Image (cartoon, rainbow, N blue to C red; front, side):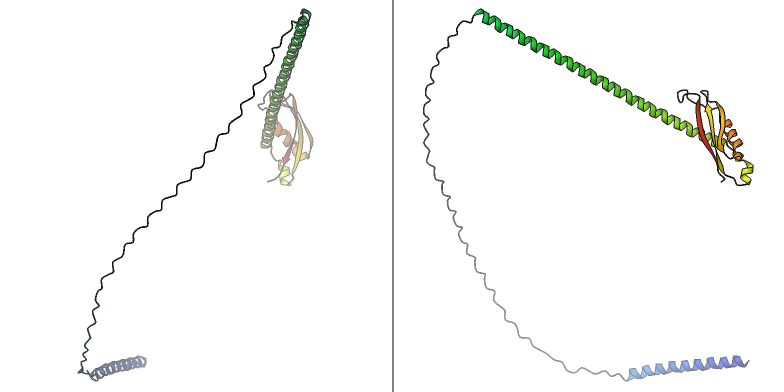
Length: 256
């Protein structure tokens, strides 16, 4: 109860102080307004301005138009004196050649000349025939060389295509065998890994025979034989290998 009374007294004191301050400030403003005086203006100053002299507008002087200078006529080019034509000397008359009088050729000389001409013609003909024969032999040799080269290129292309087909067949066969192999349970329990090397022959009909284990751990041998037997027969081209074709592959066993 005392606590409530004390708080009430405090609040009432604060309100009284605030009201007193408000009243004080209001009265102070009234006093300040009452002390303000208004001073009357009783002096008036007049000033008379002297009129400025008006400047007379003088007329602008007229511009004198100067006459344009006349163009001087261009001097005429002096005429060059005509050169006198040189008089060419007349050509001297050519001496008149005396006519050559052909003496009649005797008959034996004419026959010898004809024989010589025939011999020359025969030599020329034989040379032309020999040249044509040589050209024909050269062209035939070139044709034979080109045919041989084309044949070699075709054989090389065929060999490359056959090699690619063989590699694809072997890769597919190894993948087929690996998909058919099973990991032995005993090797899996003991965490044994290894590989087996196997040889076998493929027949022309795609079947297999003569399966043999070359090397490998004993635990994987049975699984490797079963994987190969399950992978055959296969489809194979008759021209792909010389049958029966022997293969040697390695079957790897790895735990994953």
